[in-house]
Structure formats: C-alpha cells, structure tokens
Length: 181
Image (cartoon, rainbow, N blue to C red; front, top):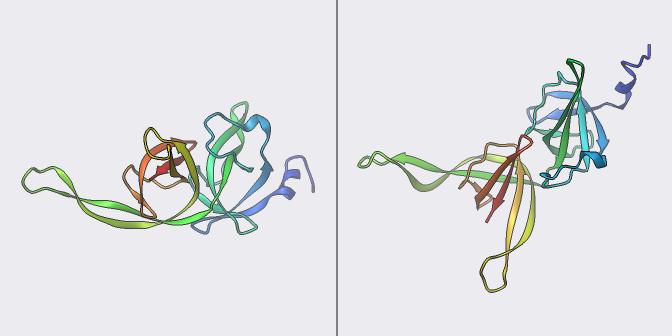
C-alpha cells in the first residue's frame, strides 16, 4: 500500500560502495541554496540517503549508470530529535591514480626518522583531478600549472600521486583536496 512514508521509494536508485555493498539513495540536482563558499568543485548532483545507510563522506560509490563518485558531506536533516536523511555532494571520478609514500627508517646513529628515498606503492585511488593555472610569484611566464585532486583517502603531505608530489592539503566535508606539483 502506498503511503506518505513510502512514496519516495520509487525515486530511489541502487548504488554500490567500492567494497561492493549495495545501498539505496535519491539523486537530486544541485539547488542554489546548497552552494557553500568552501566548495572547490561545484557538485552537479546531491545524493540523499536514509540516516541509517552505512555510507560516509570520503567513500567512493558507483551509481546506476556505472559512473563513480566521491561522497562529500553536505547536510544532515533533523526533525525534532531524529534524523530524516543525510545528504552528500557527488564529485565525479575522472582518474584512477597510483598512490605512493616515502619509506621512513630510523637512523641507527641519530635515532631520528629518515626517508630512504624509495617510495612504496600504497595502492590505487579513484580521484577527481583537474589542472589549475595560478599566478606564480616569480618565473619567466608568471604562471604555474598545478593539479588539484579530490579524494577520500588518507593522503598526507609529500605523498606521490601519479608521480607528482602533494604540496598542499585541505580537509573539507570529509574529503581531502590536494594540490600537486
């Protein structure tokens, strides 16, 4: 029987987490009031899920059209003292990249950590990557080209993403925004 409680279920899509776990959610277009000043990439869509759905910001999911997305936290709707839904920004995955980190050993003489200079592969990541041109402080052409990357993985400064070093890292909405050079 159709009721107000179950009426929205006909709009739900089945998605898969990167681990293969299915869950249901509703895709919605971005509304003007959902744009925030700290957005690096304006999302094209929002995913709304039931508050008990086992998904979190930073996770990678695949939609019904087989497009991969990174989830960024958006909001959590409350009615009184209980949750109605959770919303996530959808950042489309554009690249699959190799993630490496320097191997650190303790120097036997100084007892301090020291890089071996040989990065070890941690794995592959699905990311949103774009090229950004920025005014450089100095240089022959006055501009520098950097890559900006959005990921949900626990990437750290000085890690290597596809052979480029992470020079800047910001955490916002449960995702990491990296600048590579």
